[in-house]
Image 1 (cartoon, rainbow, N blue to C red):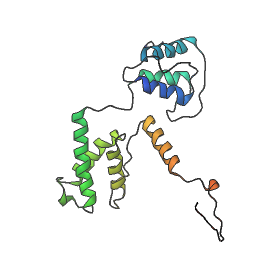
Image 2 (image 1 turned 30 degrees about the horizontal axis):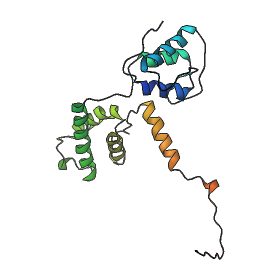
Image 3 (image 1 turned 90 degrees about the vertical axis):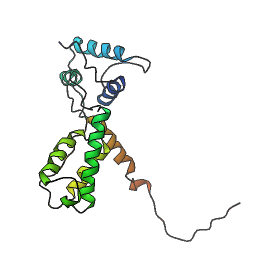
Length: 185
């Protein structure tokens, strides 16, 4: 049986998972991370067979939840040095895209070097700059492949919610023609 939850999951991450997939645990925000972990372990030890609705984490059963939180959090937290390196790569690839995909206008010697850097940075799709560079590279008609950044479930959920909030609901919009008189007091 699982007795530990990977330390890379923060209290906020655990609460987000519990709320998103509707885990039957009662907690308050005054509980600390250890309290929430203990409640999850109690649930695992109870042997309940709970099946969850489809969700962004792709967790369907208690066993899936147990496996997910026992592994390191896929939402990687980068060191400052790693993030700087990724940002420099993104800047250089962005320069390549802005100069109409001409390799001579960048510090890259070959397209292969550029593609190697792309393969490295797509694993950090939680960074907006990486997603932007992937979009720019996919606009290149001479691309060798489609670049898809790897995005953690938490960020994917945030992006979907942001997209939904930007969409206009046509049912609440009405247009009427005619002459109207507006007066101000």
